[in-house]
Image (cartoon, rainbow over all chains, first blue to last red; front, side, top):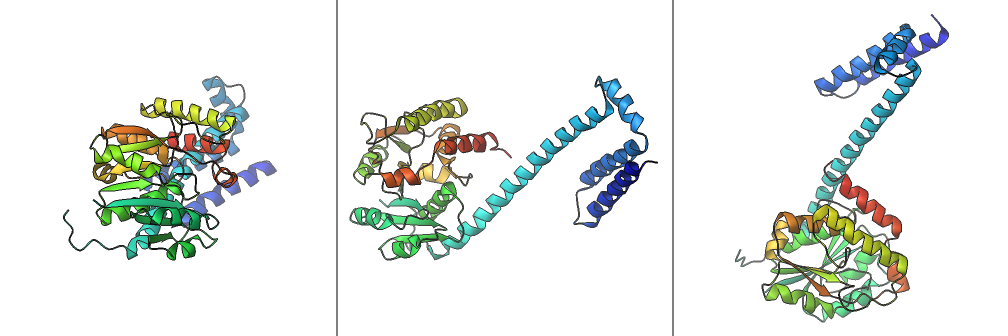
Length: 112
Length: 222
């Protein structure tokens, strides 16, 4: 086993452990993250597998395949985080709005 | 008839006094929503016979307008006017934008700086941005206004209760078009006069603001 394989596999295991130690996640997220990280470990152990998979998909090298996949992964992560932030923003806005409206009272003879 | 002026304000301490003094003589209920200003805008506004509201932190103009609209809903307003805090709108135009609502000709009235009167001191890049925005709005919402981003608007009770701004920032001008379209509200455009001053131009949005708005709209559903 090369030095980089050791480093890579240890990092994968570390990420896996820290992911499951933090707050609860939906089951589907756990499955997807586990699959990604376990396949990462497999690819570190058998680098030739990525080449075979790349050829099968019509890509020249295994390293390129990993590169393309990580771009897709980051793009997905970006969208996910963006939508989370948007959701937080709107929750924040409603809290702030509620607080600012506390001084407003309904008119006495509210005709509707 | 209860008419509420909604003024979203963010760091307008230098001009808010002048704007409010022009407006309080008009006998409308004035709701000023201070959007987390740090320059004492809220304190100055509180000295006037108006309804000052305050966001603890800055949320954006769309959020401030929605707070003002919510206040107007609670106060059971019949008509609301959106009015900018930076002194670029002419108080004399308020009656003009109200007229189609009072005659039951429209549910929403948009002020337009391009309809007939020529605005003073508008630069050509700004003009180009507004013209482009107009067509972008048309392709996204199906409504073609002469002025894509005018802050002076009037809404009747029906529109007030139908339109809820979800987007915190400057995309509210397009958002209101969606709402008009989706709820089949009747709308009208009225020529208004925009007073471009060095101050209002500095406070206004640059070209990048338009790009921001476009992206907000494209990511709307997230």
